[in-house]
Length: 77
Image (cartoon, rainbow, N blue to C red; front, side, top):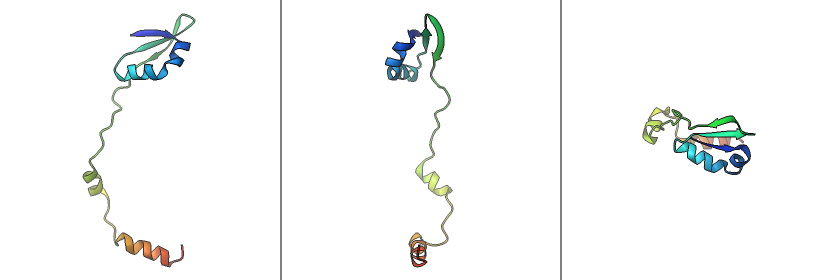
């Protein structure tokens, strides 16, 4: 765990975020006193379903898409 002052943290924020992604913690100090702690977030990574699973979960259309588009076009929209 490292510590740095607020001005330095502002100047190197992207570097601090990269360190947090690697699992490192950083204490941010103001006037020599700890005021914040930058820590990695855990448990938020969400796995995505495969495209095939997603498509299989969609409801089937009653008409082909081209027929729906032509009907909307012919109605004057």
